[in-house]
Length: 524
Image (tube, rainbow, N blue to C red):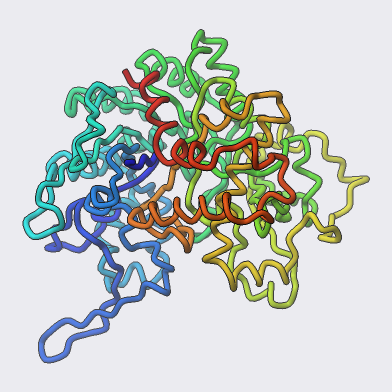
């Protein structure tokens, strides 16, 4: 059986490579550091461990074709100026010694004035390389974008069929913060459609940094956080016009990267504007594991205001799947949103980013049994909505004193056994969706059909140790089946009984058939 991935970036990292490298979306990438010359020859050393494989190829087109991923949400994303700026602040990126970080390209991106030009470069890298360069992998391999499922040939194992997704509508702006951004967007949107004549299946409206149309959720962890604080509230007037424009063009809007309030507004606007039949999707999701009404129960410190934004630090609640926990940051889905997506006949792609799935961030403090937590920032403009129900006069900081919260000792054990435990973190997401659906009186068969894979491979993620690239999907799926069918202790604490789920139906659905069935209805 082939594989499906709802969210992958085969053409992102090559764009930042050094002049003369001539990299395509088919090339394998390996981050290296220049250390000088010897006998007139430049010497480079691999530094994969330093970056935990984040810059390596995770799903280039050759990897995808060889791994039987013949249907995928192929994402076009232009790096935002604040990400480029933050990278340039680090000498290792600005020095020009990293083969996959051209400082000249980063400097141009940091100016943030020609974003649409970079979008076209990323798109052209795919359009102009429908087959691999000579000497790379399978000579019969092919890539093509499709504009409906009528263009999809499941029996064609040589072809990767791409469904076009735009991550962040800054990608269709010149300068997203310009006073003329909306007019520029409208012009570039029409140009993009005419230039490529490929249907856009879905978009994220905001991404990692402030965008004039809609407020985003905080999600940046490896660059100065203050560059990425959310600053606004929900959709602006432009954002509401965008919702109408996109749905009228039969483009789905992705939940991911919106703030909690913005997501609530999307549902309301979708219904109020007459688009209630459109499904909700989240292409590369993680789960909080709680209903949003309970988001204060697991704060390790009181919310703290500074210069307008609010800092929140969430404890890590344990999952019902053994040796797992959640990331309670509001970039992830709350329980009621899972129900909203399923009831809309939508689709949730589960990310393979270990931090998003709740795995504790590596920290020496865990050795001292300090309590693990996840930190995020909330816009001051959304404070009244997000902090509703919180009483600072009566609620003290909660410490990890009960068994439902991950301790520092347990985090250290998880880190030492990350390869095996990462399977459990993934399954925790799957079975939490099923448990939430069951509690809402939604049939498990319907809930199962709402889940697929949305890896975010090649999107600068810290991938699960047990599935670091698309070539490991088959082994990943096989071991998940082994856990579900051969380990009775797996089911001990679950709200779902083993006789309620067929392992093959569940996993075949997640890794391919659920998405295929969904697209047959919504990509016609």
